[in-house]
Length: 505
Image (cartoon, rainbow, N blue to C red):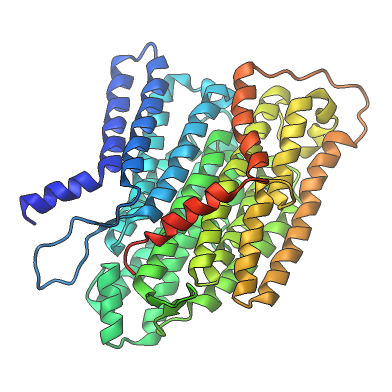
């Protein structure tokens, strides 16, 4: 690689460089100001804003960094720079901004204030891994970025040492994570052995020109999907999710449920579209290589994921576990957008994910505030909390209604576009199954509301007050959920523009 290519490549990964520098600064300032760590959160916040600017600069770009100048090698670079990656980087950065806000209000994090520098350094380590995941155009980089994200998240899951369940969450997370990483690496090695390449575009070129053993190749793909499925919490790779979500600090639980899932979905979409779609027809439907039946696999995973997530949530009494199974179910809905195998399906997935960020983070934030006030996450301790905490009760109600997918909230628009994509692809039976699952989800969301408003309490609860800061943060999530339920065209246009710039087709 000559110097001009190297300089061009570095110019294309400015967001990743900014995050790397921020990580180093966080570690240094944590060592220098070890008695007063207030500066740490400001460094984190400013770094996210600077990275936002660099991501904004990349909108409209479409290309690759770290390309080889050897004409004998078929490769188009390890890192793709395009609107699709930028969309998910925005999702990750928005999630990070809110997690910084959440952390300022969280009693769990405040009790570990002496290690706050490590906390933010680990979060930025996750961001760096996720940024490379959403842009990775090579199986080796996919694995390395996934491991970088995972190693940071393992530590964060057990960051707080208040209860035994915190360490248990971290241990279970790393055990399941190690198994999934091993499966994925084995699948990658099989793909390389069969095709002689790890670059996604080179892989497609090889599959178009040559034949491979379909049984071995299919087995390799399933192993890779298992590794990715672990990150997006899809069944049957979801086993870690309820225990880790319950045991981790609520701030990290919320972060894993949105940012980590976003990186996993971006990786899965890019892997399928770049390596296995050789053209798109006039209606936006993908013409797939006939080496592997992607649609059947994704439909099975989607139905299994949403059904298991929704029915398992029915019996949960811990609100964090309930939201964990809800997150699993939403992964199933998101997979439906990909199962359509069309541009319209991916656009629906992007729209859904943007709204999912708002309503899921909002639900976790209200749960965190209530938990800090009453000292419990048990649903029975929510009895009468609605009248005692009017704003929090109304906010949680709206977020849960949006998660159900009812109008006039943003969640309804997200599911509407998923169902439109399914009907357009004539997948009526799958759409009916998804609709029935939505009805099931309504039960356990309404169950929370029943405890908040309708269950009688022996003695009247004392009023629960929140600070002006907490009110502002909640409104930053609540208002868009309501506004985008009515006026959603900017998000639809944004998703369409980002999908059209996906590199590799």
